[in-house]
Image (cartoon, rainbow, N blue to C red; front, side, top):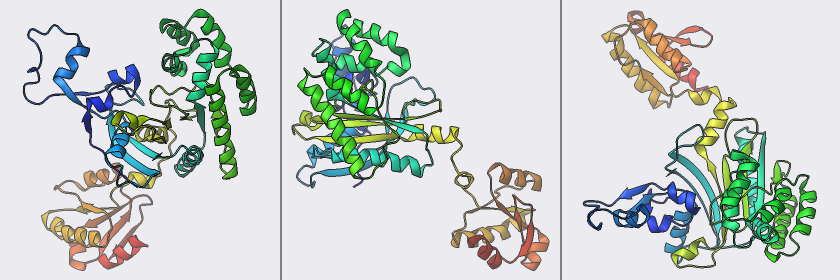
Length: 416
């Protein structure tokens, strides 16, 4: 089912769900009226103490946290498990650059109210289906499990450091291994723990090789072994459903920085393009708990629509027809032919032919240049001769071919 949620949420709804770095990227909205009314004068507080007094709302950072709030508010009306899709803008106070925007659209699909791993398998199949329909064929679906990452922190002697560990290694493809190791040290991991994690982060091989190595590495961690079992079941379920696993890669370094993930995590990387991931998601076991409804497991993923657009543009995947908004431009010589053309435009539109008339008196060359620039495939040229005979000149702007036709004949030809 489709749903929508408001652009603005209470900051208490948004904060604490995305990790420290995510919280810093939340757009805060100043309270209405005298927003300083709750602030002691003069202002001596640091911003963390000051913020709740001057801003109680913020723009939504993603679609998942507002979805959890929606589920709790409507729990008595929803049939669980509840599946929803949602396409709306979100906002992040980021530094704009290629592939990173302050406002962008997300396209989410989630199911909540079940912990069945069939849902994870269906997500992999949905990702494959969507990208195939967009004619994107060179990509990798990265998959991991946060329980495995928790197990790694236990195995290297850094229990309780899962959040710091995930935030750091989530930057691996951006800043490189050496910088990640530096950050792990800054976040309190001992040198011994860091030395133990290096071979794990460098682990290579096919799915079975990585699983075999990790089972040995994590044998003392019950949660880590549980994560491996969930991953194996997800992959086997895709196989049972005759899904395509050729693009799926078990990436041990995949962490996803959002703090609410508890199980499977996903990310899609389009290969050979200069852009980051276009999709991400994962399992969250207790996101509704902060709204008073604990133990409600859900899983979902999100496409970044703007990033997908950037990828398709770079790969030149948009068909030429998608760039054409107008099918016919009516070109005229003077006021009389313009008025005649208005009737022609009306007749074309009633026949559902997308058309427009050049709105100003201008040289014919300028009107043709306008049609070329907008990739309009046809023009109808109206002069005194055309008005007298009701035989209009239809020009194919690609071939240059021209026909003298009555309006009914033009409509029939363009609708074929």
